[in-house]
Each structure stands twice: as C-alpha cells, then as structure tokens.
View (cartoon, rainbow, N blue to C red):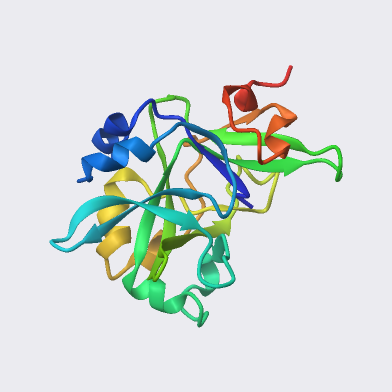
Length: 209
C-alpha cells in the first residue's frame, strides 16, 4: 500500500507555484524530479509553520524511531505512536502518483496511479515529527477506491486542493480519511524497473505494452 511514489514536476519553482506555498529559495538546490521514491528517502512535506502560512520542507519518509512509512487512518486518533501527530502535526505530501503491485514474488507488476494531467499533483495526507535530525513523516492510508481495489485493498489518503487547509488545521480532519473519489486517478501498468528502488529515472514510468 503505497510503497513508492513519484514527483515529476519540472522544477522547484513550478512545484511551489502549484502548491501555493512559501519556500526558502535555497531549497531549490535540493530539488530533483523523482520517478521511484522509496521509504527512508528525503522528500517534501507541506505544513503550516510560524505565522500559519503553508511552508514546504524536506523530510525523511519514515516516522519516528521505527521509521514507519505508513499510518493506518482508522486508528490515527487512538494509536499511541500517531495520535499526537494527528492532533498537532498533520502535513500534505506532494506527489505525482503512487505505485502498487500485482503478481507473485519475483514477477511483480507495478501499477502507477496518477492524474491524467502530468502537471497536476496528487496530494497525500501525512503526519510529521520534528526531531534532533530534522523532520520525518508517514503517509496516512485508507480503504482502496474502485480504481485501486483490483490491485490492492488499501491506498493513501488523497487530499483535494480545496481541503488542504482543512487537513492541515481543521478540527474535522478525521472526516477526510476516506477513499479518493472515482475519476481522480488513472491506473497505468509501468516498467518493472520500478521494482528496484535504485532505479529512479523516466524509464520507470514507461507504460507496459
């Protein structure tokens, strides 16, 4: 359930504009397009900071000492590991889509779930933590929608643009933990290069014949 994801937006300035966030311009030096982001890698999160404006920050994908990449949405308010972060440290994880797999071990077929428009983002609901080594985060998951269910029974929580502030600051953020509406994502079977985390290039997203 969301073991890898992508962020294929052309450059940092475009990403910041799409997100409508403030950013330290020096962070642009860290940006690169990603075609196969695995857990433990540094990625980007969006969260209110200071004066409550949205800010983009680098963070490691893997929450806490256990470096958990995912948080089950049904229990984020009761799980001791996540409930504090859900109450006070929610974030949005900007992506261009995420992967799920079918097939037996050794012959796994990756499916990329993504928007039809390559310049659109898939905003995933997340939780973050700030520690001595910086920020880390987990992606919140929920039951799969009709698009994802043939491949996997779980999917990340997808936050609509108009719900970002509600997720980040709202008292009713729990209500946003549900399957994505139909039509938001396309399912494309892509290259098995994705199966190896070290492969991170455009060839990963080539559709399989």
